[in-house]
Image (cartoon, rainbow over all chains, first blue to last red; front, side, top):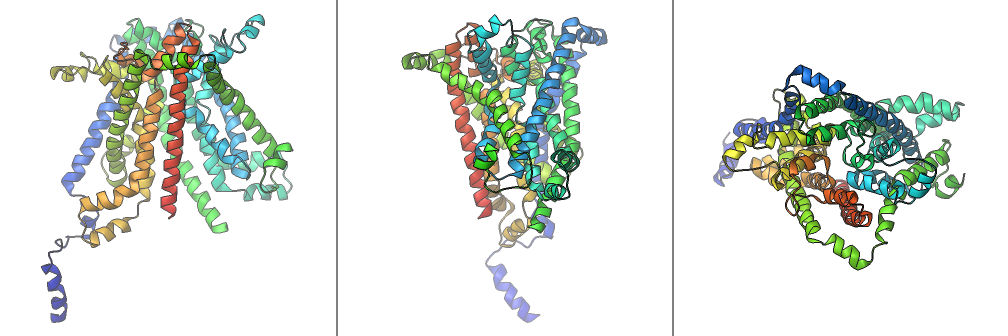
Length: 306
Length: 280
């Protein structure tokens, strides 16, 4: 007792911080700090994210359900919805095929120039949407590289549906590949090699081993890709030419209605896209956890086997 | 066959390398690289003085000031609030946390045009938020301040989502060690935790800034687009295009592209630095 005290007393004399009440306190903030931080975070998110989201639906229904429905079944709105769905229906599968091919080459093989390919796949994310539209104008527009040839052959790419699809493919380019590459890298080659040794053909190996292994990551990529494809505005706006009923996608239709001061109608169409965003976020939230767990499990397995 | 013989570092029993890489490179060239090169080739039709005059004309200079200034301040706001949000989401338990966590992705999921009209309506002088700001004489919609609001909206998820995994991986032992050695909670945060989070915070800031530079859809509705006051650089590209001034539009685009590529390089360097620090 006395020896212990004699050790302890000089230490407190050098005025060390007061001993804390529990182990929890030492690595946690005081309660008031916690509440200030939570309050700040919630306040910011409410003001910048939640209120705008609610505002879309409130503004859409401001003039009643009839106006809302009329805005959506309007022929121009319907054709915009159809075009948006079509652009997504073409660009998402294209980028899925690309994503699978790119991920297969990058994750399963070791080759020179891999980092360059990886950087180039990410490139479309750093290009402004407006510039995406511009470069397709430079290639396919009337003054562009293939402009005259296209005109002579009676083909239209910009100011027509193909241009819209191309611009959409560009802006959604990296989504699927980016989700697949880290997972397939973490999974390694052993399972596919085993399939080959057991006599599976390339296609059988892909269908029975690779695809089931990456299905959640693939779905995750598709969800993100689709959301961007349906919502793209800047790039599509440049190449569309804004021909009503023909080359207007939903976001472009919203812009036209808004500029004509038909606010309720603009928000009605916008509410459809906001609904899509809500579905996207819900799906993303569910699928994301699975993908994260799969990547973690795969890298742990690799850690044991290597 | 050619690709696998020349590029592969190790022979592999797995099939499909030539097909997969061949398709990847071809697709990359047709969709991305060849069209992008068109932008650079087009600017060569301008002489140097012509190019310089286009990209430094007063209206364009004003747009750079707005675009870069608003993007920078918005990215700063994102870094500050993003850090708090990421911290709160990882460290604390409170009602509705999972809903809030999912909500952070809204700017990624909500089409920019929808965000643009919603923010404009909210911050207009008769809008839900704008009417209160008007009382203190603050006008947001149709001013440069509106550009800042839209860009803050767009950039938020970048900071939160890059910080979250880093915060989740933090080992409690470090903080316990700091506390044992007599550090106050604030000292632990500023001297121990913050340096660990710094690379991720910087990456998130750079990603938000880079995204804001090129943003168009959410900004044009709220900006009011007054020449010399609230015109962003991407809008000037569109204006030039509508006047059939392709070379002029491309000149401005090339300036923006070069800045974007420098940002991409900077982000990669920050991440490489972060990895090295983590390993060391």
